[in-house]
Length: 599
Image (cartoon, rainbow, N blue to C red; front, top):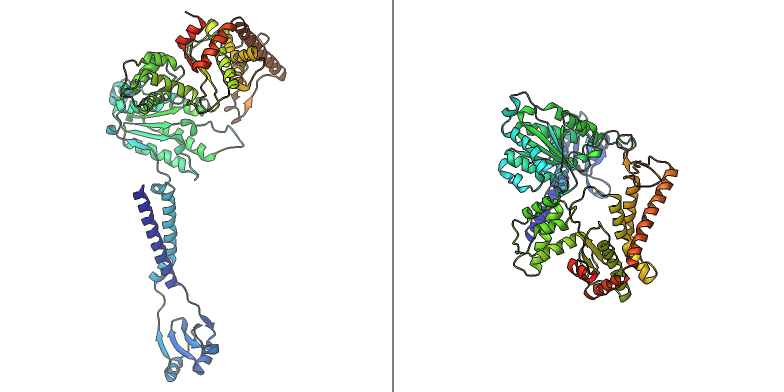
């Protein structure tokens, strides 16, 4: 850091010296203060003997003379054809000389030097803003080029995603041996669109394709095309494809394609001509290049619904590959890949960890492994143990423990009964996810306690009964507070949000409302193809909306009453569990089974 500060001070000193030199040079050419006289006044001063010296130019006469108070001042007058002037100057003993018209070089320096200084300081400002290399080259593509030797990622480094890798192996084979496909007249898709939630490995998979094929890899984000200046984005697209065709076979990877490829004309009030021109140029370039040369365009997005339909038609992004969240087997493989360089203890069970992390994507799992390693290092361990991984999962799910937050005894009792209420209902109702841990240690920003449930397996379908059980588990904490203390607290705020969202989805999306029939009401459909950019519409009437609210309230009340019935009939277990939780602060799965007397 000190070296950087020294370099910054040196640069500032040189800039100051350069500015000082420029100012002095400009002052040397700057016109001096002169008194402009008529020629008759000049002759009058000459006759009085007040002219001290004269420089005779082709068009002007300059010199010094005595004015009021006998102060010498410079003067200038227009020269008039006067043959007697030189004789009179000699007769009066005035020192005189002649001068030629100013040289072209002098005038050039006088005009160009300020312009040069302005351009120089403009360049310095741009460099300080991090855009120095792009000075006067806005139209060049910003794509980062990775040579074959720079990419060390292969399909072996990408866990899970077997179906996606099989789809992309065809791309790899074409880049390695294009004659195998072209000899029968076939054409490989020009573009492949990777679609999936954030963190699922779309960028990693694109690099693996380039690493397997052994070809150059052009990587750029969709937002890097669009600039303030009109036409820059289209110029960058042209430059990118020109450079890629020169190095074909190669791969162009455009990350976050939705930043560039939003549907055109979706909002007449918020049009962006520059972005649309850039998109048009991309469409033209994808139509124009010859796929036989081995140029493949890969793109990734997590918002395919807002892309322009012209991008998705055959001949552009022909193939769309879903990169979905991994299942339990995939999460186990991903954990093993990220734990290759981690020193592991013998008790680490990746299969159990995969079961604890439903819904986690690759980035989340990498974060879990890293957090576990940091926790073990913080505790001075030689190896990362299973307990470190479990704590890392809890940290990712619920946040960092905040033991410094002190609650009074009444609040601790309310939180304990609240969390045991969740755990007891989840343990007694059939179809509920097993409870892994219950804690009354504050975590994160606002969580005073938490109940961690772990599904037995990945689920892709759920029945109405299972969803009602989930609602009862969510509302059980509030029900326990009401039964034990006779009033409720604000601790159920997050539970109510989740329960309301789930009940509304049951009514609007899954057709599980009794009075609405087998109809799906989509209240969050974007009109990106119907003339509105961010407009949200409801495709049902106000009368139906009222029925929806009634159905949602009915489901919540039914689930809440069911939770209260379960807790009322097992008050002894509720009190025993709460007392044990107040004593130990954390109860795991085995301890909960012992407290509740379950097998």
